[in-house]
Image 1: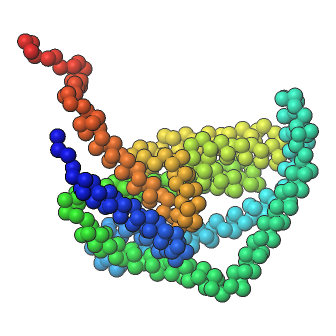
Image 2 (image 1 turned 60 degrees about the vertical axis):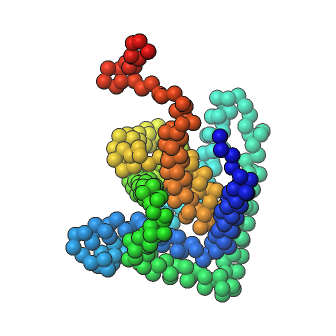
Image 3 (image 1 turned 180 degrees about the vertical axis):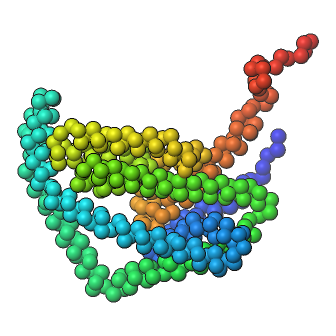
Length: 382
């Protein structure tokens, strides 16, 4: 058995220490530059999402600049259309919710609490001081409004903060256009820096990471959008004044299993009981979400997301929250790419482990014959 020289062990330890220090330094630099890097990261993600369509248009005979211009224009029009349609609708729904709050309060006090007390035998009004809770919510609401006013006043007085915000918003489309135009060139330059011995493995991992992240973002976004529209239109057809708002909330929470539809059903049933007070409209709410779940389970998710993504919703939520806690909004933007790359690396590590001698052992593994469903017999006489 060969024994490593102590100097080799020291050199290996120093190399690992250097890589660790480099990683810590990069994280610290990322934390410092988070406000500046945010528009660049967001622009890179938008360019990455639009690059496949630009490549397809380029293969169809258009020049790169023409293809990029078409894709960039389409993305800008989609964003403008979403803002034009969603912002007034959400504002109107929130106004309706504010006007309906006394009705919901009265229903909760006069119907929901007595019903719960009759079923459980617990005097909830003794344990829940509703007046104090309402006062607490009102005080916090007013305080939040005061904090918001203070922040807005500070931003208006601070020319640098306001200038930075305006600069980020103005730079985003410009950076996105240049990233989208030069995306293939940037990828080629990064690939040229990879050691030639590891180029095949690195290319495979990068391709799988892009497929995982792209499949999740595009597929899950389409599922959330379609279900949000279906729930909103369905609840609006049932007659709920807050149907569109409830549908949007349920659609946004769709990526969390059971939480999205459960929250939508609970909110929809409460809205139906408060507004109409009968079970016919509650049944209508249940029919809307039942049809939505059938369409999601048997068509939307298998068709648009598929089973190859591998990003569990709990892991997505943890990654977004952890990234936001560590690096703010920039961390939230980087959370999904980092989670996708980590998922691919973990699968690669598992693949290497299952093919290693540590996993298989020294003895050859006995493999079942799939054709006959039996194990091969050992030769006689051995």
